[in-house]
Amino acid sequence: MEKKLCEVVVKDTTANPAPLGLMGFGMTTVLLNLHNAGIIPLGSMILAMGIFYGGIAQIIAGIMEWKKGNTFGTTAFTSYGSFWLTLVGLIYMAKWGWINAPTASAVGAYLLLWGIFTGVLFIGTLKLTKELQFIFATLTILFFLLAIGEFTGSAAVKKFAGYEGIICGASAMYTGLKQVLAELF
View 1 (cartoon, one colour):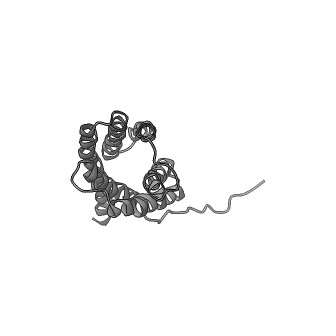
View 2 (tube, one colour):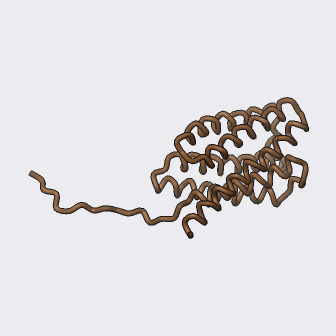
């Protein structure tokens, strides 16, 4: 017969990684969509944000969410961090001559798949906060608009998607900063 002598309770004292992931996603999304809306040109500032903050910082946040046992956060942050890295890779690998640039229909398919993935994650947010529901709903719409813009070649759809993407990114920034301030105050 085995006796239980004592029970050890382990308390998680690690920081909440969600604000880092939300800010990396949000700020990078706003910047890219300022370009899509025709407000600023696509340049090294946006692409560097895509690599370092949208990409690497979100992957770090995803790994931190894994440590906390949050499958949704792990999947979302690691996936969208990888999205930013692949997007920059698609742009730069062609510029460096490593591969041919993807066709508009290939980019459309890429964006469509991200839209489907995001739509499924949106369903998961129905068990989470209204802020996350808004982020994922607007992100799903953004990916579908961008895919339609690529498939049709419509500059107007791409520009409209840019404004919608600014709203999506700003909502992620709001949610991330709200979490930081809520913890402090």
